[in-house]
Each structure stands twice: as structure tokens, then as C-alpha cells.
Image 1 (cartoon, one colour):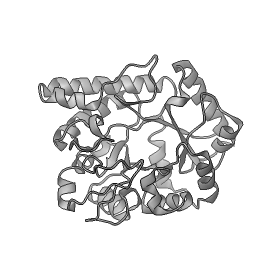
Image 2 (image 1 turned 180 degrees about the vertical axis):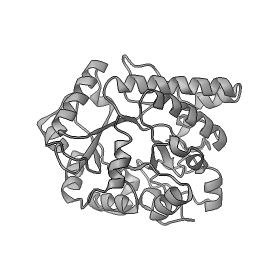
Image 3 (image 1 turned 30 degrees about the horizontal axis):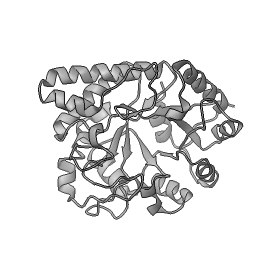
Amino acid sequence: MNQQPGPVIVDIAGTSLTPEDRERLAHPRVGGVILFARNFESAGQVARLTADMRTARDGALLVCVDHEGGRVQRFRDGFSAIEPMRTLGQRWDVDPVDACRQATAIGATIGRELKAVGVDLSFTPVLDLDHGPSGVIGDRAFHRDPRVVTLLARSLMHGLLLSGMANCGKHFPGHGYAHADSHHQLPVDERPLKTLLADDAAPYGWLGEALLAVMPAHVVYPAVDSQPAGFSRKWLQTILRRRLGFQGLIFSDDLTMEAAAVAGGIVERGHAALGAGCDMVLVCNQPAMADALLDGLRWRSSRAFGARLAALIR
């Protein structure tokens, strides 16, 4: 059959596919899977799992994972322990050249180890600035200075690309300043657009074509739009695509997060994200919500979507 991919990223229950997983993967609206720690026992087991998922899909399937390092590293036993990205920023303050070399080496390690088990994309690097108060970002951020973040992220991405691993910058235009955790609350960042573009959003323009994908934040920036960035055409179309020139694929953040509820039920959230300019939407840890979204979503593929997705599946 060789199905064409759809716009929804789903997850699976455990370390092997259940009949329900197989049925969900075969749905025409599915385009990818995100893996979590619960899906991991060993490198060999994950390699078998990703191969089985592709067989169940009978078509193109983007396999993703959050594998940033530090506290956000889903695969551990048998994989290299990756230090938090803030450590690279601290190293930069002592020796910028060595920090960039280390970032490239880390990116190459992440990419090589993930590629060996059938993963296509790691949702990294975090491009949020280390403003300090944000507990959900914290040591996941490289540095406070957007110039340092850009250069370390570019080095990390170079290592990923050398290993054939796609990257995704997050969380556009920046989640590092807002205090609230969007998993549980709707964060608000009241700074003016001029400040956001000159500071937090700057890496997205500076990284150019090396940045293959972007994930917007479930954060409201009232100076620009009353909707969170991931549901905002102003942020995704006017600013990210036209003003900053980004041409890659845009993922929503997880639509089951509390901050996404502002858009309504799960089907409304999917339509709002895709309508704003997301190419793909994630629905995680809630299989009933995933099924409701798959069955209720109205969507039509396009050449642009196919080309952007094909660039991530290697």
C-alpha cells in the first residue's frame, strides 16, 4: 500500500507494539511517532521496535525522540550520558573554541547512537535563553546570550547532521523568560515584539538553513497575539516564515499540554495549530485524545508538506 504520511505524531504504549498501536499507526492521518523512556529497554529492543513500527505503517514514518541530554534524555542504558546544555554554555565562558568542539562532538554522538536504532529526528537543540526563572527550561538552555546560543546550537546541529540526524529548534520564539510551565499552565510573556526579536527569537533567524525544523512554544505574547505562538499565524507565518525566512517543517508542541487547552478540545487544537502554520502536530500520552484527533481532523496534504517532511526522514 505504501501510505503517504499525514500530519499527526502519535506515541505508543510500551516496548513493543500492541494491536491498538498497530491500528493507530496504519491511520492515514499519522505521519510519525515520538518515543519516550517507557518505550526503551535496550538499544537492540528499540531498533526492533522502530523496524516493526515502519512495517506496521507500510509507508513513510518519521521516528522522533526528545534526546537533548541532561534531564531530558529518553534512552540511557547503553547510550552515552549527555550533559545538560548549560554545561556547554559554562564552558564557552572559559574557552569558546573548546565549547564549540565539544558541542559538535555531542551532536555527533547523539546522532550516531539514535540513527543506529532507527530514529530520524531528535527534538533538539533548545534555543530558549537562560533567563533564570523558568524551571521547565533551566539547564536545558545553553546560555543567556543569544549569540552564544546560536553558535553552540550551530555546532551541535553540525554534529547531528554529520550523523544523518535531523534537528528541531524549540520553543519559538522563546520559553526561557516566562515563569509558568506550559505542561500545567498557560505562560504569558509580556515583553514587546522588538525585544523578543532582538533577543529570544534571534537564533531562529541566524541559524538559517541548518535549522531543519522548529517547535513553537505554548506561550502567549500579548504584544503580538492573544493566542499562544503555536496557534498564531502572526508568529508562524508573518514572523517565522516571512520575516525570519524559515523554510523547514514546523511541529506543534504536545497538544495534550494544559496550555494548549486554550484552543478548545483536541480536534479544535489540531485545526488551530495546522491553521496557524504548523505542518505536524504532536499528541502524547493520551491515546483516546490521539484517536479523537485522527478521526476528527480535516487535512489535505501538499507538496510543501511532503518536501519538508522528506528532508527529515533519511
